[in-house]
Length: 111
Length: 114
Image (tube, rainbow over the protein chains, first blue to last red):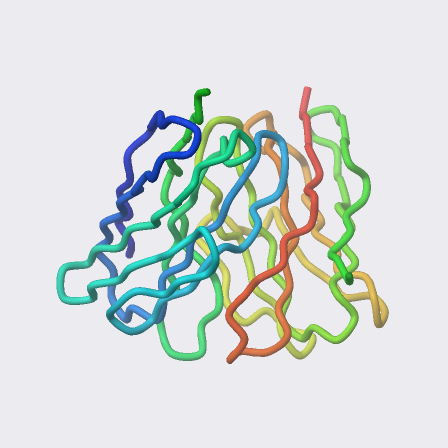
């Protein structure tokens, strides 16, 4: 089974940096994903971590610590369009591809 | 850029009726998925499909549900005898192979059961 926990809501200022945390408990961990979801739209892929450390992708970075069951998504130089829900998801089991999502963190960027 | 498409965008049905939700995955993708998201709740895995058969399914995916790839391009989710609690956004997703990590999601079908 999976237990994925992330804050429900966050607010940050345009141009600032925000860190969204995710903790998870799962058996057979095989990767952690971050997706962005605007209201009423489909999730879109942001990042993937399977080894410990930081993955950087433009304004977005994602960190993973497998021993702590912890990840964060870092968004830099926030823009108004970054207002969305950010979904943490884990994949379990070798060969398995289905994702198990957290409830998501709704980020509001204010001027 | 290739994308996953889904039809219809919104389906309204009466309780007890059958619905078929349709998806066209990206053409060179081999793995297909259905997820659902009840309004205000998390995205939930339903089923994965590979090589013309179900590879995994969740507890939600009971005998009420079935999937099919009737031809080389479509991937369908059938819900028999719909219930009020089946009202949700249903997302189709695909990825190229098991070693490729990004799943591409379609825009979703909003199912409303009255």
